[in-house]
Image (tube, rainbow over all chains, first blue to last red; front, side, top):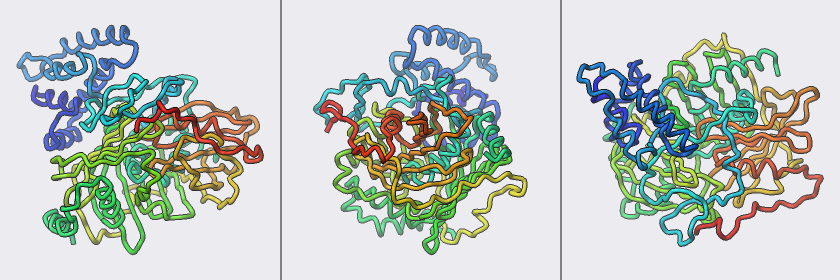
Length: 209
Length: 333
């Protein structure tokens, strides 16, 4: 994999790759296992570096990831390591990152914790025209494109909804989903996902539950 | 006959009335018309929650019948095929197919609800400008929520065909949680039936049928506390895989976003579940209300789901529906 491709990956993760180049990159992703693996790694790196959680812990992990980046061999012989690191680090004071995309190994159903989102805090949408100061700690948002691409917090644990049950209800909901997002809901249903979840669904089917 | 993009451009230019184009609502109306009347084949990329999925879509509107096929390019062979009221999700890697049939086809035509005045209370629609998208020039439209109970949308509507060729779903902080981009789009008038046949051996699948909903005048249960702007639009009973008894299904909508509420009777020997989940743009929240399993699913922020789930009561309670409290500081208009 060349430095140029690595740079494209990084820029893609930052959401800054032009559409035409994105199309070419995606086509290449379909046939290039190594590239998909790199995208997964870089996405993980971005998620780790994103400064939206336990900052000290994130920094510790980020330091390890940074070291891993430095160790990553330059396979094209240029000795440049992973270009795009600067791009990965450049937004949000070096820790915020436009990440959240992964390649082939993805989870269809992610178990999320609602604790933070349902805490008794004001939930405000942002508006450049709004004269009201938001009381929640959210970033500015205006008519410009969002600067970051976030992966919502994910937490496994006892608060998880059984994935098979979720899948069944999601299929029932699909037809009522907003036309604006119905394709996205459908995409979620057929995404390559959590094999355990789907195995559970298959078990339900066999047992007739 | 496959219409070339050039032809589509010419047709679009003839119908677009560009002189009156710079209204967000008008662009949404045009998009709705395009979604309702177009037959097309395309490829798009969906990015959400740490995943990238490349999919192919075949969509046909023919004699009032809407057919659609979504195929994952991940190599799993998974597909979603719908024809009006019936949706089939094929999961060949799990030897499983889930069939969902609904009694009414009206909602499946892909129409956006009309942006009536009431919606102004919850969304602001604005024309942002023109951008060059992957498939050409597009009008960018922002549909922004005025509170935190719903997501915002940014739409890139093709200048010529009026199709949404790119979209982003944003949370209350303005951060993108889902992005969808078309990389190919071809309009085609005569898509054959064979284009909607799944490319797999259906005889090897185990079929799970989620039976039609039974019309039910009385909801039995209702949300006594609802997020502002949401109204009950559908109520019924239906079979859902994994449940041995009919599940009550209530659908609430604010005219743009929708939320499904499922209420399942207690099952002896089976402990109810409390928890949450997420799949792409859709989230779920499940809890127990008076011994019943309540699961809420929708393309809204998780907080909204929890308001619904915890505000449900049997109708026999006689409780009146009240909107979730929204303080002045919660609103930003």
